[in-house]
Length: 317
Image (cartoon, rainbow, N blue to C red; front, side, top):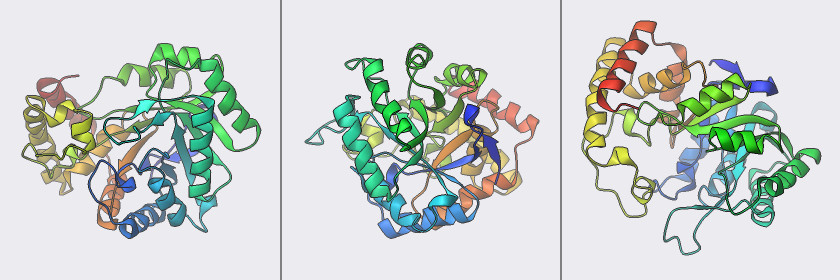
């Protein structure tokens, strides 16, 4: 396993992070709870020391999976949780921002309870909320840090102006943004963060499974699937076909190295110098171990250039 310092925190974080959104069982199809627990333990056994979760993932179910998986191992892992998103009560649409102290506090305390811990290592404000003044949200999270419930603070899905503004009220140690070969719109934000000694966590590193290589035809997704609910462009035409063209280059590298395509995509992500750690969602031990093996080798400079060229020629930025 490879490790990097997470920004100004100075904490050594594995370059692969256990992502738990799918483990919550909402939006990504059914999951087996026991398989998810074993997958988390398998990744910890391979040296992964960082887990990302949020109450909104499965309405607390992902937190419970993590809590069960790390029993007796809390001192071996770093936990990041997030609050600030809210689910529609009837499940009729996408999550929406709510960074009010009342909602944030309720979610945070629920996460701690479900995780079976009295603190988290990193707390991220999940999304900017234009209806709640930043200083009001900041007062809430700063209080948790003073109380010892949070070691380090950060943000998620914030642009540069929003990070600059929130940075007036909290000490931003980390930022989490969506980033993959297919989704690169946040790249400038992450480069800015690194320049300001802010650690960078990337989510959706495999583009919701598309860069794992198993999907080769545009799937028919149920209405409650996250990829349809949020209308991900790469699960629609013409973007989907462009990704399939990109996969031809990844297939070539994977075949030459005798590794799964997912490992190529994960290494491309973690080898970017502005990326500290990349979230990787898994639902069983087989996926967990295969993805962890990506840290046993690295893409050459030539391979990175080949992939970057293919990205520019297919999906662009």
